[in-house]
Image (cartoon, rainbow, N blue to C red; front, side, top):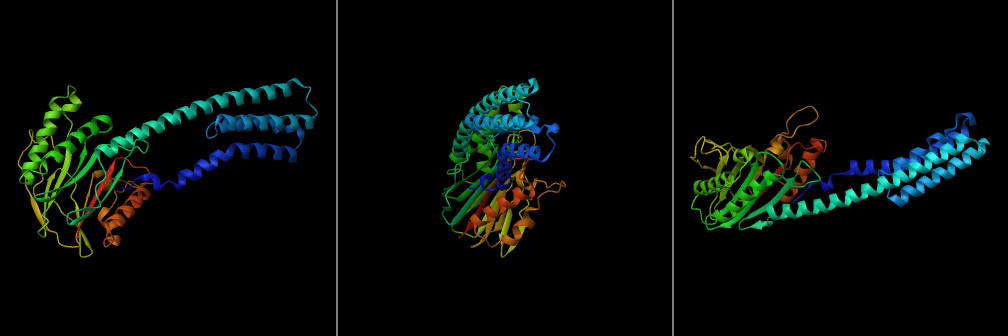
Length: 363
């Protein structure tokens, strides 16, 4: 599984620049003061370094920078020959007050960062429990996955996927819950639990879809809020018999997967897509299964709309099939790595929605 942690060089560079800014401002004030007439008195800028330091330095580091600023102010004021002037003492007092306030702000920031780190740890644990890492091999197939949460600090959302080896072949589900936050995570958990329970004994994909529909409908009925009752999830079910060369697909309002075969990439559009889960009672509960050839070396790429609906700065949607074709022969892991890096670069590291991808190759 890949995430966006490996795609942050710009953020790291920006952090380094901000961290050095207090020292740069302190040094600039001293140098400019030496090179300009004393009447200009650049010591007035020396309250800035400790204030800036609070954003990236700890309380001790902020205090040290404040002391350096105060020492520079005393030296510069002495050079003016004005240590006995009221305004000189006022400037020193201002630097001292700003330093103390900045140290406190730095302490509060560090406490907040520790709290956020704890929350991220909990979110990552929940992510692993909900969308657990899949094995790299499952029967006659190789697998690779990617999950990118739109909220980079949360690292969890309403997209989900799962794969199970069953008597009927490898069964796979990928889906996307409408909405965000904990309600979406709760619905995703319902779908994942239902799939893990039903995938092994449901005789066919329509029966499996019916079991999933029943589970999400029952969960929604137990939710007292109107939002919970209206919540739905798109989904795509796939079945790969291990003793054949076919692929069966059942789409419930989900984006069509890509089939990579012989160096070409094409979409497997559903001939009769069913409505999303939890909407069948309003529209139709009939499920249609499509089949496609899926031989040795063929690759199936399943994804959520967070991938296909990613936009660049000009508002153009991400052309998934076009961007994948140059690396169509790559291994599932290499495909995932390429897609993750390319998607974040295309969106300037600013995803609007969660994005999940599952790549399956028949060996």
